[in-house]
Image (cartoon, rainbow, N blue to C red):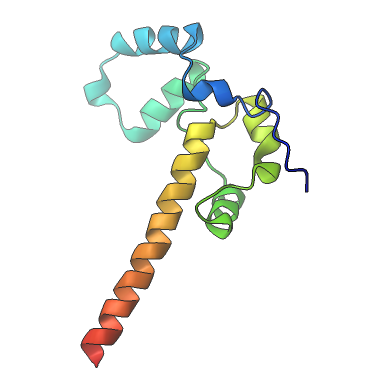
Length: 118
């Protein structure tokens, strides 16, 4: 496994740089009746306006990979979707954090249940 990460390929700068395409997307979103949006409407809007990396449509395989990886994503598994802009690095880290929290919470719940059961 190559430990070198090409910062450009994973679009590392998207963590702090707000590009014109995102600003244009937000401006277009301001013209919408977002009170009427369901979650899928927002995701669809972002994808239609070139910002789908904010809320990717995760595949079952991607979710399973994230769950298996735990808190820190293995960037070797995510190079192509990161480089293509299909997913954003922040979104990937959020997915990893969510599944890590779920696993930790499940372990805590199991432990509490075993203590209460005596």
